[in-house]
Length: 152
Image (tube, rainbow, N blue to C red):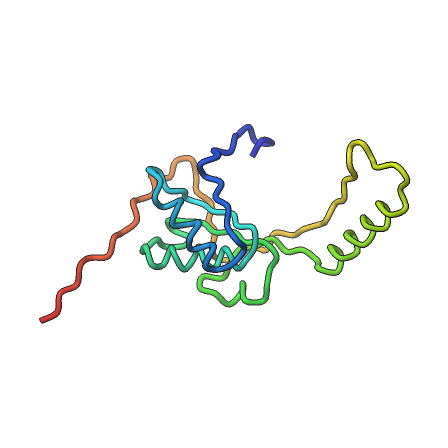
């Protein structure tokens, strides 16, 4: 966000536990705010699936009313409805980087004062849980609330 001149509002950063239930709970906190978000980026795909479930319960249409992005491209991501946009990474590459970092730290006699940077290549997998909104687009509507049901 800083690269495009935006600052993240701390109220929009909600910590979860990387589970579907955690995604539901975290998104409920975002929905309780006066201006619910139009897009959510999650720490992993399971959290994103939880956000999608909570959105469904709140009758918020994905991607019309909310764009959702996950991270790690688990197999299930392509089968949820709508299919989840996600960031793909190589588990093997992550393991290699972690091993190299560990070996470098073990072999180093003096800790690096500025730390060490490792770069993991990622890939955006565009599916149907996101959409672009033009600057001219009308404001996103408020989520529909379920009407009370009566039984005769």
